Length: 337
Ligand code: NAD
Picture 1: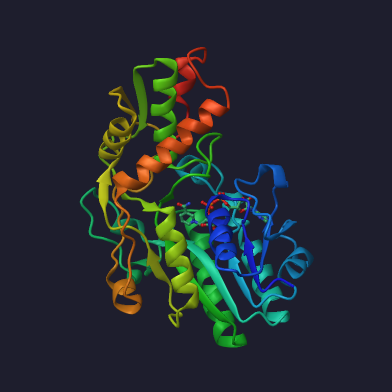
Picture 2: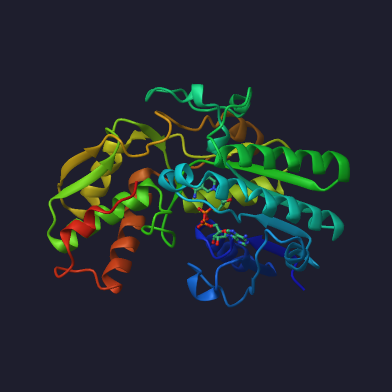
């Protein structure tokens, strides 16, 4: 019988979380809507279930017999996806709602919800040299339209299920997580993976140009997947009921991110800036004061180190998929992020 359920387990963060839990000897039920052959990672030691968790009965089947739930399932992607699919992003509210109801009814003890830095108010992120976002900056609320509103609403749903039904809910606000075994093409990829793909494609095809969304001066902090998994488990195990930032505070411009990827790849490309492309807020980083003081921990993986591992995985995966000199350099430019 599973003691722990991870939803969104066929996705990027869920796949890594299942790996860590299995490593720690936990009985895991891994759940995702995608067919198994589309999961980024399948761990034989975990029970795998393909279920559409927008459906209430499916949620009941997913959590049956479990003590803990990690809800990482959501219809999401990078800024290009969330700006163009606001309704789809908001429909993820069905997943968290039905999962919480099922968790309550099945006597689940602890419930973790993967929220996002997209809950933060837009006016706190309107310049590149912003201060890190502190947890209280989510209110008064003016989050990212669509995706961010759904995350903020679902956070509050967790809070009220804790208050009214006694289920221990824990919430992390992830800031731009990146690493191997995630989307790097197809439209759902985020900036680090998209830039690694574009640089790798240029290298593999002999291209000399990279397209960048925006002017490249927008700032972000990027959180390596190992830190995300460590922080997720720390927050889930903690007695901190309020949402906590889970993000790196190493802020860089997108141009600096491209510099790093080029350095790892050993290439230098001409930059073409697409000023009309979606680019999200102007500046964003994580203020880690609260997680440091409450849990004595914060993400520490240097961006250069995480990007090296990410680039190598994406490059090698592209080679395995047949990318090479025969591929078109135009395809290297891609259309996203
Ligand atoms: P991902 O897209 O790789 O994984 C999400 C998974 O959820 C996918 O495999 C998808 O198939 C699954 N899913 C979607 N709808 C479902 C449904 N109806 N039933 C069952 N499964 C369903 O994304 P990720 O990067 O691994 O993100 C995991 C969680 O973390 C999400 O909730 C996301 O919003 C949140 N988050 C991620 C980041 C990030 O930078 N990656 C940042 C902030 C928040």
